[in-house]
Image 1: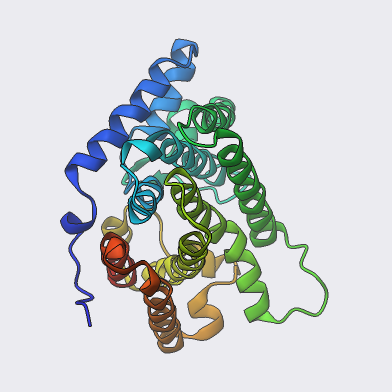
Image 2: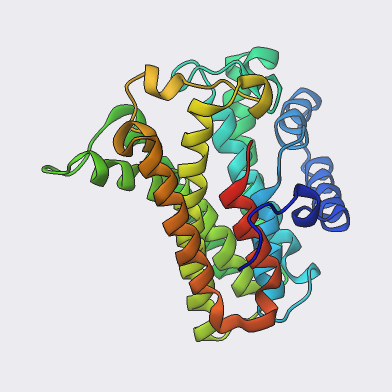
Length: 294
């Protein structure tokens, strides 16, 4: 069994992160935005963050035998969608957060109107990046729009409700996070496989892996929200429970949440078996995501 104490430096290769950062910056510079909009977009997109989703896209592309470069534009597209979602989620009308990635959120720095417009611009730029992909741009754009729609549905369920009748707390929690968090993570994996020209069996393996790690990521996030400090994770903590939102610890309890993370980790690892040695980076990512502390 692999160690679950995988370090951040093992996962986030400086060379790959550099490629992502450079391409994101070029997309912003070339977008033709006014100076104030470019500043707000750059602050929201280029101001740090783990870059997990674009890394997933690149590693899934590599796992089916293709190059890093084949997935770079698609990887940038998912990061832009993620950045758009954070800018809008942080707004006073939604989560009303004042800190993100250890610094003030976009609406605190630029005002609500510019934050809304910067989020809109990021979503448009994401579609431009998807359509710039070297492989199957139409299919990648379709995956991006489907995931974005699912993510917005998840935010509506989480914030405003609208569940199908008869769902218990666990079913509601699953509905929220399959959409709100899981959809874009799964999309990141799927479009990496598409960029790599994956055969049906390999595509299915990566699709199942992305589904499992998307839920595992959220379960870990919810656990950190009640066990770590805001200074450590770089954003406000313990807000969801205070707002009456459904979280894994609220619904499952702390111990069962840890068991659920372990179950999803095992399920994720099983999904990768058919990929053999090509899945080495994905195995490392699984262990990192299961054991992360921020």
